[in-house]
Length: 556
Image (cartoon, rainbow, N blue to C red; front, side, top):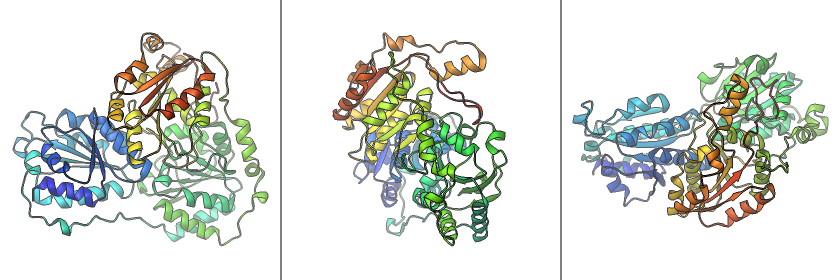
């Protein structure tokens, strides 16, 4: 058997059904056998887009996908996608072509040490130089991607290795089971004791809780003890919007007034699968206060890295929450009517503190766009968003009630993530609408992937919140430095025609100037059988609520 044939059969055994990539001379050995496999391959139009698609495929489905490209600049184009996935703990299998082993380190054409380049932004990388070790390396790569804190792995394949003979018996191959570390019983008892003692506890559900499939256990614990639940940005949708214990988001950017209020009024924080990163916490002093912290994270090094934990539980979130709930159930549940007033009044407080999205302004107020999104799209819609002021408005204002439906670039904030991610999510979820929510500047990053969507008949919807500015950077210049320079892009309201761009790439679209036209445009987009772009002309200099500390967020 040829090694490339073996690799394809391993991918099939590991459950890979879909791959995104671009063939090239350095990887054609593998593509020869991919051609006749059960794996469906989607040819994208930029290598970075392949990684974003594979990442969102996983995030929306929980199933791994592969990203494949050739050597040299094809491989280096993977780097931003790998970083985007890695910082958000998203596993995927990245396979790159490479020059033959005899040319490694000799400046051969399109020969670059991608394993070394990608090492800081991937969970692990390999350059496979021994045909006899291929099966074991791939087994280890899949285990590494899935186990513990998940992440992307890179397998660099020299062309001679791809084409080498191997005697490995594929029938003997079996995937590794990813270990799920159980919590320490003493830590669970200590955590349960702190929860019982607390007068105003709060649960922070992080993206790790979603990854572990633990949103249900998190909610069950909250209901048993009547504890408000704050979701981090990466866990948006982990608790239904109208659930009486939903305390929204906390944070200095994509946070919400209700989340910051509940957190600031708490005396104990139970953080589940979260990392307490800067965009969430802001200034550490006000965030930490005099609160005690229980931190559950599968990665031990995350515990205490930013916020010291009174109890740290290095374990699988689902197992830890199940154990904590079992301990809590040794006492009767707290009845909703017996809960603390701050908990009983949570639905009313949430409604009172909710930011407005019904403005009738012309030009359109950006908030109104998100109010219309909330009305126009169903609960199973898949949303992606990349970076900038539009992403922050989206996080603050969009209402998401189901997990794995809101797929932002969280830790990296990658412009250009949105459209290829929407494509990948749609491939993983046939029949579900995928919507990329982005700014006018970000639209030009990887817009070519609309042609990929059109080719494969995936009617991705792109909503452009067009303020003709680098909006977030303008706001930062204005309030942090008191100047404005190189951030206006008024041509995006005049000579740029994004509808024609969409049509030229096989899609369709329209431009909206008035708030009353938004709903109808979104309905037309959902009825379209092509990729559909709605270019929404909004106020140029509307500011976004944010601050440096959760107790000092400036509202606009």
